[in-house]
Image 1: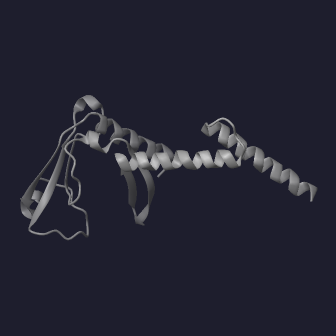
Image 2 (image 1 turned 45 degrees about the vertical axis):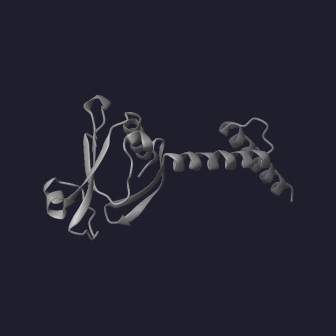
Image 3 (image 1 turned 90 degrees about the vertical axis):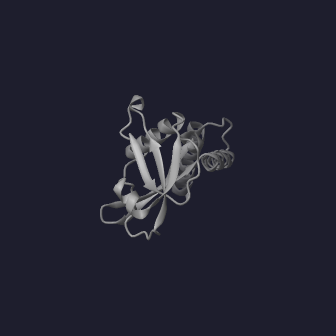
Length: 155
């Protein structure tokens, strides 16, 4: 998965989150859930009664997602706005042709972003950067790298 694809997924999810679309859930028998075409993860074991979560998309968003119906045991939000902001934090292959993505959303995403900003500030301090912007920090690290290379040549 390339960076552009990750950004596209993040943009789509954040757009839907900001649209404040209602999220509904109900309990159904496993057979009724299958009949409603609810997404079921391969290899998962489900009981006779399952929780089905639905998000109705809208055509005004211009997103490929129009409707999502899935079996779920842990999502408890009333609307998509509660998962804003959304950030994919890792992805990788779990089987041939199958990718696993992990994300943070809502307050967890806010905490994730704040930790990254704090880490960037620490790197800036180490690199003796006065301005607190990502570009300035990168420039400071590159200066340190150039100094290290020059020092190695002198040895």
